[in-house]
Length: 254
Image (cartoon, rainbow, N blue to C red; front, side, top):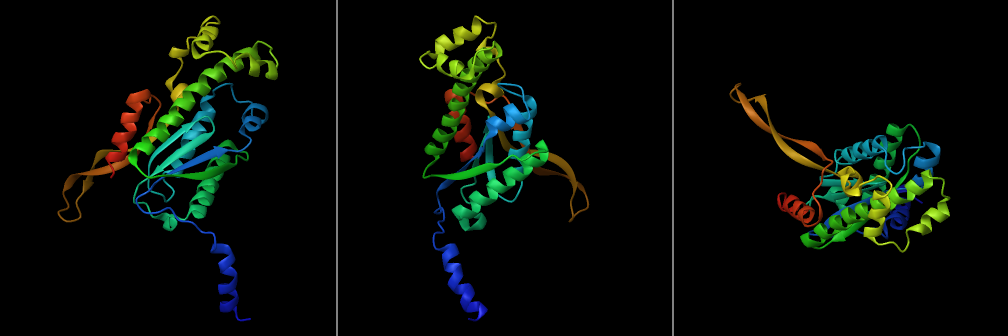
């Protein structure tokens, strides 16, 4: 069989299930660490429940993903997860799902591993959101999840550090209300409201414009040129203010 015929025959099996995200649909990629509890708590013994070194590695991984060939307007990270909002008109890889997922997971895994000096593996999946409100809802969901996880994690690890076994620590808070968990921490000297915002709300990364001096190629005169740089936000707004922040961010690039 000639190569061209063989190539045509076999490529069908490789591409038969290719799916592309339709134009006009927002893409959010959700990238999660694989087996990160063991990696961060046993292999590398990061501080529990939160560690600034681990946070900084995750932030640098987000910045890398926003600079590696995709047009991403917002990156968000909490714990071992990353969410990326693509520009509505981004057409990288013709919006093929398998290409976006495989490249994003590979880029995240490679960057994180280089920073950590050990293997850190991520998976990726896409959320296809048909309107701006659902984009706002998605990031509000992850922001609220970060807040819930922070409260639970501080309660859990406080008990663990007091010598309580993992299973016992797990079930202790199952039926507690949010108020009761806050009181539990307060009685042990921790005011949850005063903990760093990045622990409770995650970290946002987005592009901001700035001006710098440049030489005009036409007149050879010094002019002010507008450039963009990534800004890392450790003090994200809360609740409705965060929703408004995301809505404004999306509208600014539509």
